[in-house]
Image: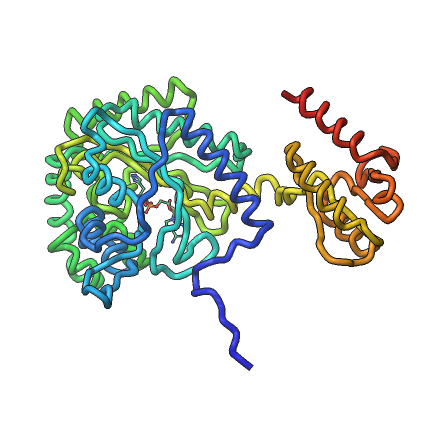
Length: 428
Ligand code: HAM
């Protein structure tokens, strides 16, 4: 016998019940994003490796340890499965000159790939709902994105203890960060012997990334390290005050977290994350911030920008914790046929009902009425429509309600269709 094949570790199948919940969440998300004027963009899953290295930064966990990078054996190109999508959207915006007639609000949904250790809420293929506002330099754009996520969480029923908590920080302007960097280097150099190997390496190239270390032995040293907010200049402070005022005006709760640095190099000024402790270990559901120099760094004309991405798996896990499993999408009617000559009129009726917008399930073949009835019941359909030999000869159909109080009735097919037409007109 052939051995069984299975999915790659950390990459999940979404079976129909699960995929239906995803579809519901996807449609809610796109509805909210569109309310704010965001338009969809779809970029390839594979990009040339430098797109990510240049954007995310060479000395980051993602680029150093987590990217699925490979050489295309056919032409020697260095390629990477996208670990995130900000880099790719910026690449596409520059390539297609999207900013030539003004700023753009863009959103996307799709799979991302990071070689991380899988656990609940952390996978190697995961999905993000993301937005990128390119060409916007005012704090109101950051605020509006925070409004969007807040609105979305509410629309998905994430309230009370299920509502993720917003944390904010400012990473300042380049000159603020340079001062912070200097202080960090001095501090870590004076504690050199306590640095692990990774951090010793990062000290020379990207000391801010030492702060991302997940090594518990480094935690205390990192806790006492100089923090960015102490180095913010006037512009960064003023920018943050305007953002906080907008949030307060909308009654949005937040916590300032001076330790929030994000794991990607492209950020400046505003950074934010929504965290929850409802998924076991504390998890970030959404992360983002401002990246005013990325467009230029990727080869475009300078353009300020701000964005975020929501982890779809984490969001949906949370929605399911909050609401329980949503019921599967049941058909409106299940068509049951039995006996000679019944299949053809039943098959035709199914199509006529679908013409009228109904979801109808029809089983081909000659299974018994009893077994079809069982399937109709477990499908969750409201109605069973039966066509047996008698009905087929008389041009009739028996309507049997499967839920609620209604009575079973046999009627001409034309009468059933007329009822459906009236119902459609009433709803129009
Ligand atoms: P990120 O913080 O790396 O940001 O990822 C955003 C979200 O994706 C995380 O908060 C988390 O919910 C989810 N996520 C990340 N890794 C995994 C994983 N291995 N398994 C499951 N979920 C995961 C970015 O990717 C930026 N591009 C966000 C952004 C957009 N910033 C500006 N614009």
